[in-house]
Length: 294
Ligand code: NAY
Image (tube, helix red, strand yellow):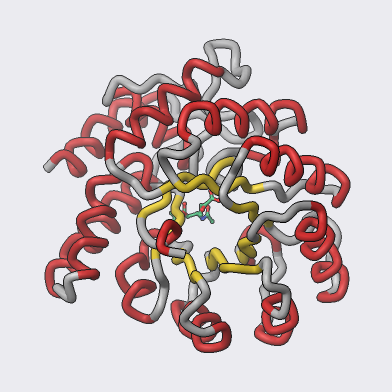
């Protein structure tokens, strides 16, 4: 399980000038993050704008990333889709491509009972031989993974981890305490990376790692070394940056993509209804980048 322990950026959707998924730009972002020294990539999740992509587009992104980085980085495919059918299709495709693990949010839009969610995740697991990582993100899905359901799920040997994006860091501690040492808990909220690690997370998957991988890698280095004083300082800097990133008029991912442009990485903007940064707020991008560079 060592290959899952570390900094795993949530991969961004890469578009061409017309807003279509771009193979060359997807590969360019792969190379950029690979050179930064991250542990792996979480492909097609929230930051990947997966819910705005067709099945074919999601397959394309999974394929381009695998072709570029398979065997070089730990690759986790997020396959959660509105229907179980489509989630299973994506899981099988990720297995064909050689991904290390699959992961999924619970089903969305309607309210689902714990038994429906259990069934959904189990059907995805049954579809392949791959390890599975539960994705708990109650603030966007409205479904909060309970310890009872968690206990039922981890009876299945395929479940090797949980990516926990709920805000209480205590949830990380509870999942870890319930599942034991041979189980990976990923910190979800980037604003709490250091606290998540200290309370029991083995690493993290995050939407802002891609724009400041150096800072998260440094935070991780300090936490691993037991240097909490310095880890806390880096987290403080990270949080100033996240607050600034979230203060502009477009979506967070649009801001992040504008910042990447300043680093020479062009991956387009975001797909509507997500909004692009516009007007005067575009002039603030360089200032936020300066926060990272310093
Ligand atoms: C994914 O699947 O893309 C992620 O892992 C992103 C998780 C993000 N949470 C939400 C609600 O979007 O990384 C966080 C988030 O961007 C970060 O904490 C900044 O708020």
